Amino acid sequence: MAVQGSLNAALSKVVGLLETTFIVHIIGTVILGVLLFVFKLGKGNIAALSQAPWYTYLGGAISVFIIYLVAASIPEVGVANATTAIIIGQVLTAVLIDSFGAFGLTPLSWGWSQIAGVALLAIGAKLLFRGL
Image (cartoon, rainbow, N blue to C red; front, side, top):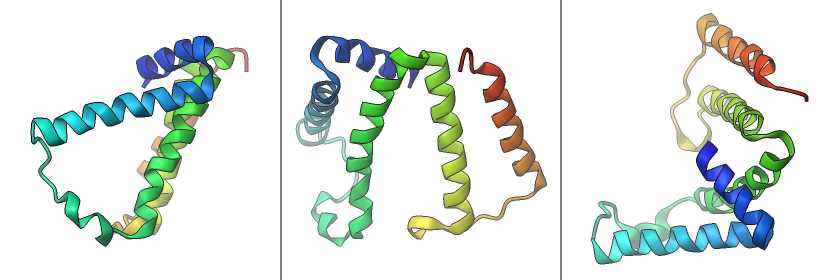
């Protein structure tokens, strides 16, 4: 994540943030197209695409915002701070998804040790943030 974000931030300084987000997705699409259709590495059933719930397609839209925001934030706050904030956000979101069983996943209960772990993670993040 830190390397990808840094590369995207560097590219965005040359071509712009939206342009970088577009280019990154085009490159990813081409690579995946080659892996799926040339090397036949896919093990799923792409023909079943229409059977997936509508909300499962939001991942593509969310990735546009993630790539854009990471590329925008790294020059402002630095790679370590941006990556730390992203990880904290991801863990807290994961806790909510697990707790509620969102998106058709099995709900998982949380105990005090997991809550303490998230709290310690947040404390560690605060210690890592420099100059914010």
